[in-house]
Length: 385
Length: 228
Image (cartoon, rainbow over all chains, first blue to last red):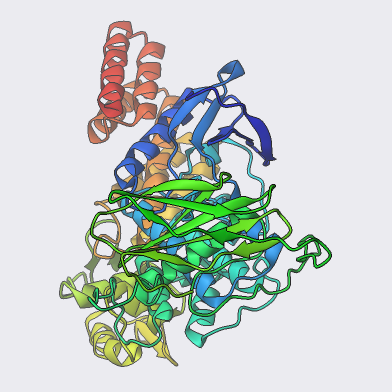
């Protein structure tokens, strides 16, 4: 096990127990046959080449606890799509599409190397500290080793006879989209949006697995098309334009990513979505009453980002904020995916590329209020929120 | 047996003459329909299976020449009806009892399992007959979640049938037959641990300790190769 992390219980499922440290999570299983772990290792080996390429949260190591029980060590991702929706309700359409697209991309890559997820639900769509959504818990080896417990996201064929194949993963993608769009699991509420999307979700959730879309790659393509309604053909990457201002998420893949980064930051901050994009996003009212509304009775607080200090290969950022806040620093480079970095300090050094133009802004929350600075640029970049 | 999908697609007429199904799109359309016998398949779903990289604006229109031609090339259903029906942008391939090898295969395995405890001799015949229908990977001309999942399911079912065939042969005290079968199976998939373990067990029970030890060593080697 890495480092001297102190682990504390952060979740219990029907089979496994999850412990979280500062940076790592341990998913502890009951003792299991070595043959199962051999099969699990084969699945992980198949997924290994995808590491860093696709949004799949990798298992770093299998550690042994008491009784030789296995525990999977992963990077800690403290927020899940299920948790986000429980706190804030349904997502906005572009956010839901971006999440669905990410999940489908991960599943398609796993299917290409012959690995089925087997239990895809909004609970294993997690937000990485970097801001990116990732899919965790790929593979059927461990699932088949333990008694099956159905939940509201379990595919009909899995409930019927325990079948978990590529078609069950299609159903899982349908569940993710349904929850993101409606705030409810399948069966409750009807997704709204473009006809194509509503139809796609309905097909993904088809009772007969054979009626679901034919490939996951096709689902990825459909979602990409829906994210780009203004163009006929889906463009994987927008052409960089020389005179284009540094506007993260202005078009194409960039926008999708920015939206997702916004959700992730919000998830990590455990408050309402704070989005960095053209239209300020207003979170929909949450279904539950657990979301704390911004309080007007508290004293006014200020958050201000000082002018960034350009050090060539790095930029020093500093901001003023009251005590008790957590910060998300958004770093947007020209023609690059913006990054979100979570910090508790009031300053940080961000590595940058010598020639590129950047915009920065800081979001802050104390669990009740969410604040955001106006963006600050270096090297003459034009920033837009 | 008019339609054979447990291996490369084969279609024969009632008189035994081989039907000519051109490779490529016609073969894929027919295979996709045969992967869902007696079920209605939407034009959209069929088009996705056949043209995975593009989305035709009017799938039914593009599929029509193929389904029409396939009706001409395939044996009639019940001697008078078209094999492939089409209503309102949906298609169905009609399959009677004993006409499709995958359906017969599943029935034989099911019957064998039912009879295994009480009548191992008939059960062994069922499993043997099921195994003999197998000619290779089913639905290999397609690349869809459904085709892969069905191929995987049928492949697992075949190994189950073969495992049960060993059970039946052992119940009939046909040790030699079991050993021959298991040796052939370890050759076919040297990584499958279960076959090796079974071979060791059968040889041990037959008092062939030296051979059992040898098989056991080979099993370890096979597993080691796999782990690397």
